[in-house]
Amino acid sequence: MSDQTPSPAPLDPGDKVRTFPQSPGVYLMKDDKGRVIYIGKAVNLRNRAGSYFTKAARLDRRTADLVREIRDIDYIECDSEVDALLMEARLVKDTQPLFNQELKDDKTFPYLQITTREDYPRVEFTRKPRAKGTRLYGPFTSAKKLRATITVLQRIFRFRNCTLDIKEGEERWQWFRP
Image (cartoon, rainbow, N blue to C red; front, top):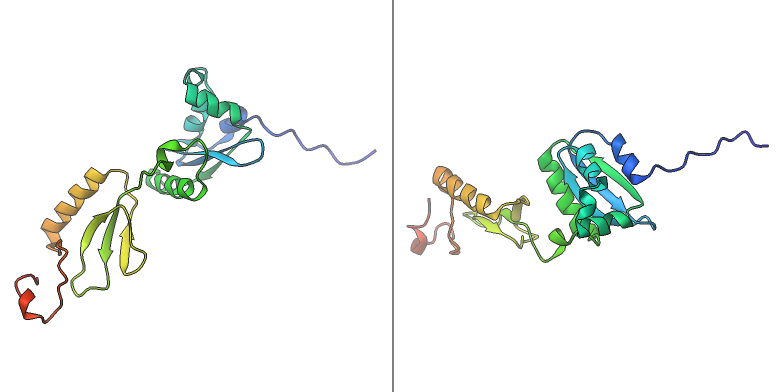
């Protein structure tokens, strides 16, 4: 006879979520092969992840299809709701889970991009960030709010918002320089 005690059976995902913290984060739902099939964000991990395992959630066909596939669920705790949103976006883009259709379907998030290799840098809205010569901030969830923010920042800081190739010292651009 062995002195080893058998390891406890893994918790059912519906029971496991009851042990999650009540803090912001990202939850990862996995199938029987351990593959991540859905990634979601939450202000309260326990409440949000637990909501998938209620009778009401099973009434929605897409949710019911997802829940049928879940064999395990994990979480990554975040410092804030914004951190959770950013982490969710990054993980979904990197892993492309089967059930994350909303974030996978060619929807790209907007970024605030500041050019850094120009005499007079531009501050601009973009959905296709350049890899070199820029500083990126984002992604943001609302394109409308980002555009409004850029407008307000431009009024305050009077930064360049045109696409002309302005070189310091060139006489023809004298009226475009700050």
